[in-house]
Length: 395
Image 1 (tube, rainbow, N blue to C red):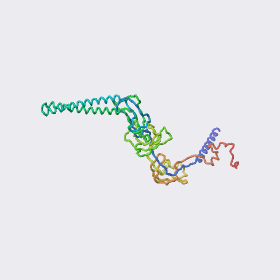
Image 2 (image 1 turned 30 degrees about the vertical axis):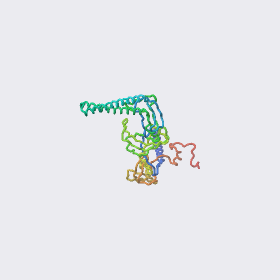
Image 3 (image 1 turned 120 degrees about the vertical axis):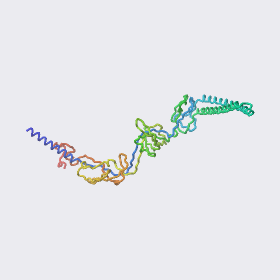
């Protein structure tokens, strides 16, 4: 008896499961997402980071050693070409000039003597009153004295020039963006020219030096449009243009990059030298072209998925789009162009405004079944809610 009871329970459970899943399968609805073939703009871009700098920046140094005696400018000072911006102590340089001038006077005095001495020996040589060797010695002494005067003159000129270097002038019109010395500091130019100031010519004309990865540099060309942002003004987008693609490669941690120069007009002087720029270079821009989303090109109406109620009219093509008319899917062979990763340009094969299928959606229970089961997937053997009324009661 117990065995028959277990068999009966198993049969009832199998019937219940079959009824439940068959209802769920029948209630499943299929819908399709569509979009129109519309005109849009397709862009491809390269992103990178770079550093802002003035187009023309001059480092001002000194060619002589000494103590900084006076400074006439500071950070952000506006300077003109030829303006005095600093002075070094002149004491040692003036002393050197005086010493060289004294050497010149001594050499000149010796030259005067040698000229007179040579004149005497030349006269005696003509009368054959001195030997030829004595005449040659006098001539050699004269020539040596002449050379000594020339050397002394060069030394005086050098000392005078060095004295002039004690006064530092601005080489360009611009703004002082860096000051490396203070009054009383000693600067030495024995091995290299020490930096005193850095002057930017025009901060309204900036540029970005961006490092572009080797995988992207092949798409970058002069004249391409660029947008960039800086952390100082996160809500502002600045515009520029690629002005130079430098051929020199830089390798850092086995990563090869190339420098790309980007113009950065700075009329409002918001941008400052040294800011980090997040750069987007638009390597391709196609305006007003027919395009579809990439998922539309990937859509395929497989019978196993859409069901046997739909007919499929296919064509032989690597790229195709599908339209749905009633219960019939029709393929359209298309020629595609550039893509930005989201949309792809359509060159031919379908008309503007055509509705195409992009995806298939499953889900939902039809209204009739929802009324029968109150929107739940419960067992048909379970009692309904207490407040549920029959159709006759609703009437």
